[in-house]
Length: 402
Length: 224
Image (cartoon, rainbow over all chains, first blue to last red; front, side, top):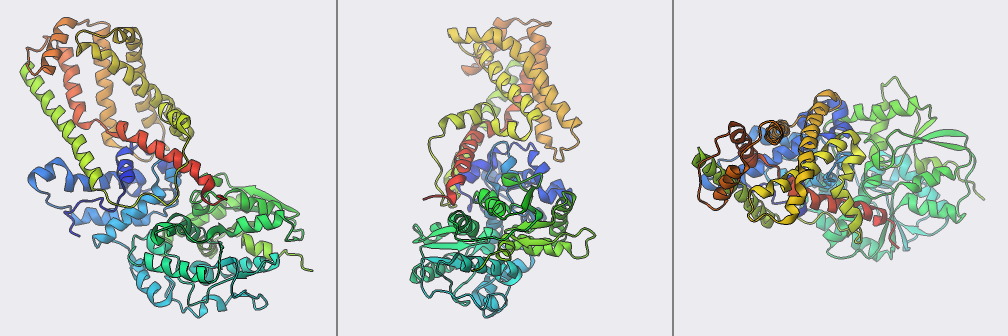
């Protein structure tokens, strides 16, 4: 696609309206985590929208129509591409937008537009489609190691079951205590559950979707849906908010029809099990602070279940961040930016650590593998320290057996 | 002078309409998928109307800015309605009813614009400055000040002004009123036209969509 062609072909009509509706008020900057650490308004939401409008005007405006568009300066396009990829796509700007622009959805589509023009993605992100094709995960790690390092030896999986569990690539390779905790808790609940083999459980498509590389998404989704259907799955559980997000929002579109099973976040299943007394939990006297992952809270509206689980642990006192629930602040791991704009991500992670320490929490509870991996990394070499634990990791260590 | 002003008026109106048509053509070209597979939740008409009319999203985000913005939008709308009597003959009864309110709305409009500008410069937390918005606010402020002056201390011959406006609308330009303040006021309006933000037309749809999306968020993962 040439850079004289219509900018916005990838956008839906609603998104074109959104671009036009931005009043450039700048209110969103107060809540943007990237702004918190870069203080650079040129990569802010209203500036990205202003630039994209300029691109549209340059290719489709009256002047361009009357005198033929001369194209857009490549440097401007590169600046825009960097700005749109530096974003963590956390959606805070959307939450605070006076007109309600759905930016958590808009930024990935603008990224897709840049990919079509050969300008995106950035750095290692460009290798992800090939990595997924070859290894099933975006990190190019061997599929045979997907479960081997963390899957508890004493847990037995059903060959076929109505409950399926999807570990996800980031959990399986980068946040293993989290997925181990998931499996231990599911095992303790006692209902049979199944998983795909390490070769069958491929990437859910989210890293490709979020970086604008959509070419193999349909194939991935069709493979996964077919595999889970063959296993007789009626409810697919997952603990990764990003995976859950693409599963509920986009899998039906990519699959072409309604999914043959329901998608549930693991905290939903476990909080129900706790309510039904299927799990017994030991006391643990501690003050914990819970961080809402952006794609779990603003993404799919899971706010109460993690709190319900923590509230069900005897002795646990739950603290809240100043910004929590739908207003939570990104820990820096989102938008596939954490490995490309590592310094930003570390700085954002440290803001989360700072607040947790200042609130005198004994541990910081997370429920996202990307958050888990990045906030742990942010702790390395930092003078403020706090134990980081995934919600299922915490719970699995407190299960009363027998 | 009258002919120049009227022709400029025609030119800017044509540009404004072409902008609108251009946007409609763009909408036809957009071929991307809709937002998501999650359907919106219907039955929130009252909430949507409140969101749009009272700018409730802005209220939730910044109450100080909301106060100024809401007063600005409402007073601007009333002032526009008040101005209709200069373009329509015979003047409908309801436009006469707006006149007394319109006079006060002119003061509110000026006050709200000054307030918004002060808020922008005083609030150090605001990290983003849209120069286009500042320019628009300044032009609107000057328009409202010249309008107020004409309404209070520098009273105008309204019949001449109305004749000029009606002539312009009926494509037969006439001599402009010999009033410097009116010429300034009208020129500022012409200056405003090409920069007039279209969000006034598109934002209500986006607000409506945001309400549906937020309502449906509660059911994304909790459907039976």
